[in-house]
Image 1 (cartoon, rainbow, N blue to C red):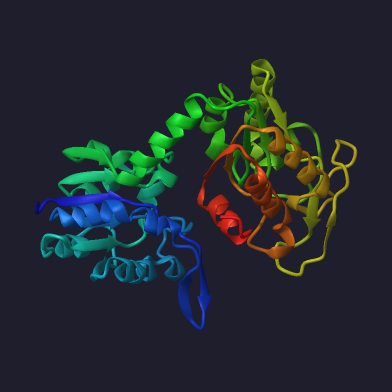
Image 2: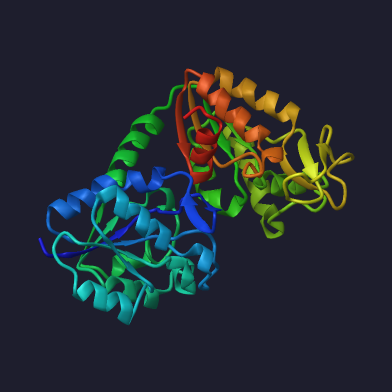
Length: 360
């Protein structure tokens, strides 16, 4: 009772602007943290929540403020949520000093400070000064070596995991230690570098890994397939080659998209077309971008999903926020819904896609 408890949550939720107001379109992540928040309130803690939101790149960007999330949380817990306009320093320091038992505060977006993503020990220490204890309940961000996740633990007296983290880890261990075979992994999203550790670990267990999303472009480049103006991690081609070699060595079937939906601009209504079968001689033309999986890829992936007993999906197949490039992601969401396999879906984008596809 009366302890200041710093809780790292994952409030990186999808939002949109309606009539000049920011509206949260999917509150799954906020609701998922309620058991921990409510437990701390009931036990008289002073709960200080902190989260990242979007990618403001170390600067204060108004559209990435957590203020609307504080207002929304207020309606869920039926008590005021004290909002701190800064993350470290005098402003949150004063707020915390005046908190009563059972109070809940939310700090401004951690990523407004460059120290968060840089895992800067000075930033970690400044955060740690605000609390007596630290709880990590940000399951969706737990893999990141950031100041509020990794660095902070060196500066607090005691660290613990929250109830959401405990629940998710328990389920993951149960399902992934002895997965039903065939075990199929669908790995999408933008960056190979974000998923390298996960991919290497999964190669110990998986039978098939389906690579999709912008991440596939790095693998295409490694295989000499032209990618036009597609998003790519040009400095990670060696990494892609290393993963291709590791899959071969481990006898894991690593499947890349065989075609794509391409366009010259990433916007709704942009003219788009099918790429046809992608090969080193027939790739994505100059000035065009890979923005979704093509029909052959969708059919190929659906076939792998149909025979799987365990499926892990992390990351979309395309820019699914734009309806023209959502077909692949939604097709996979529906294929998972039809499947009888044990299905684990990770990453906010994939969870949102499942909801938008109407199969959650």
